[in-house]
Image 1 (cartoon, rainbow, N blue to C red):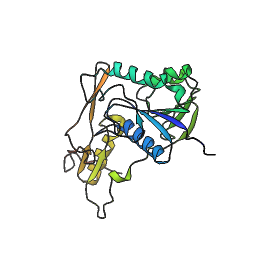
Image 2 (cartoon, one colour; image 1 turned 120 degrees about the vertical axis):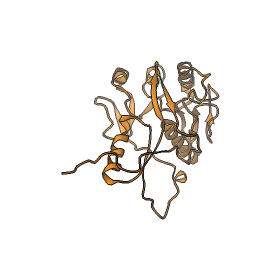
Image 3 (cartoon, rainbow, N blue to C red; image 1 turned 90 degrees about the vertical axis):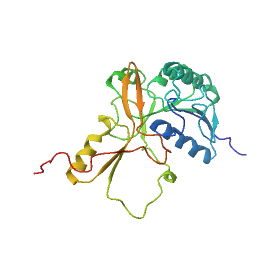
Image 4 (spheres, one colour; image 1 turned 180 degrees about the horizontal axis):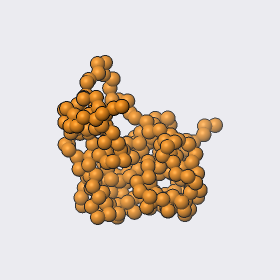
Length: 244
């Protein structure tokens, strides 16, 4: 007798499409997990924006992410999106949330177990939510990015789709930094390394600013997501850094 595949709900953010056209780290991870499970025969439902691309069943609340459509209010979209997933909780054996602390507030209201992948702690101000729901099921993306007291089941490093990064037989001479332009991401360390080595640094990513209660994200250029947005930094060191 065959055993029916487990039914898994993947809760992706609705800031960007899943997978994103450009930036969208959490949406990228949610997409990779979703498509990987589908390829292995799992019954997966993806809660994401309506323009998402997936082989799973997609259950959208908004047609486009709020970062891609200014007519969508972020808070309204998020509340409707998260609540939709949990209103269908009884249909699943597991809900895998990539929605930070917000989805935690629903976890005690349903019988379906909820696994939360924590993609980083954006601010100490969000910690009370994690502390209240610390008995939940959590996955960290690195051992160094853990908060004490939470019920971690494992550390699972973010995988990548190798098809997006074809092997190049010959290396270039430039240094490259890809990521959100923010002090937490260490772009200043990349700049320091470029100055020390005297090599050109290419920086690709969005610049995130906080306007009111919501982050606003700017891209240097619109481009295909396989051709990362780039900003060419100064070719030669701006200052000399002494090394003892």
